Image (cartoon, rainbow over all chains, first blue to last red; front, side, top):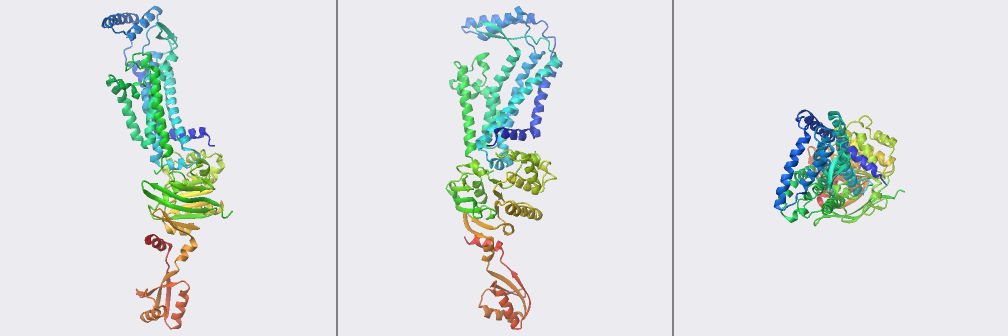
Length: 316
Length: 306
């Protein structure tokens, strides 16, 4: 038996021996540093000194907003929660997290997961299709290794790339953030509203959970790009379709949210934060429903790639 | 051991749509033998080879490698096969050595560093093995392709057009390697080509494929012998008299005068007799040259008559 670890080592070697991969990694580091430097030197730094005053004004606005919605007969969970958290901050002297702090910066950087998704799509789109366009698929497949194993090693390598990028983003933003903004205020907890009261949460756990939520979208786009790459053997097609869907998908879903069937579209389900923090796109959707939908899509994508890769006549 | 078939094709067919691309091919290749697979472009050489290594499905029939079916037990069967399919495409952004490491990891029995170095030496790439493959010449890539095919010491080597695009020196080099490998390592070698002159120098047996059918399988000697009638040109004086003399002697119609030579088709053993007859009848024979039918002509003859 050929060891599976060796197959993954092979795929990694092919991935990291290419300049393009390192350019992508470099761009991610550059973007992260860019966010940090911009926050530090361009954004107004005095904005958050009177945070107590600011919160009080905000609370007043929120309360009046709440009254309005009550008159209209609709509940407004989000406003209520925000209000409770703001009161808690004032009582316990926890200033809101702002961008110019280690945590604020790290939270901002989690938005760069979209960037990671972009590059992961590029990797996923190429990892099978390139073997066909380079013609190397022939020599790759005439080995005593089943096609499914080769495909799996490629899929896992793509996932490892994505995980690596996220860990890189997380750890570098921690290092870079501490250098730029210092470590004062690290003891600050993250506040969440749970079962009618405000709960303190570890900030690191919160940031990791943000990456977790963002990664679902990334993971599904990765699988989609990988599937297109395998089925059509064209990396540009895979990149094109995946990026197009990544950017327009959520908008499209938003636009069509009046229709009930929208909830069966993948993009209506990939943002699980709509359940923890906000309202679902289509009323009546639940976390369990979304997770099931994500799994169904995942199984379809993987099954398509697998069946087609397994049966394909290689004539490249 | 001599009659142990390393690879056996049994009634292999490939159908795409309603068209039979490969129609009922059966053949055997034995240990220590170089088998040439000959045919014009588009005859189905590459398709057959791709079926033999499992790159494309076999519609009907069987391919056995050391008795193991490539259809039913792919991983075990392919273990004994090394090959280059069409051009030896490698990962250009990696060094030749990294490319070999890549393939060395894909066999169950560890390929040692020593083995890799030995193969590199065998194909004569010691100097450039650490360069990126993107900088290799076609000949070097061809040799790296050969190295990758030999890494795991297979018992069957399959080479699809191994001399394609090489210069004469490169062609001779590859040819030398192939003969050396087959006879020293007792491997079976299956080589496809559309170049006959190539095959003539390299192969022990030849199978000719045309329009997806295996037209004939012959040993090299038989194929050359098939050209029993050789055309010879005789430089003889006086020309016209000699012409009439030979015309009468052989009662042949395919005798003619061409550029002051007599051109006549004779069996091999008739040539000295003809010479003797001319000399004995006081003709001045300045020279006899044989414009022997080459394999090339034979091949064209075979493929055109079908």
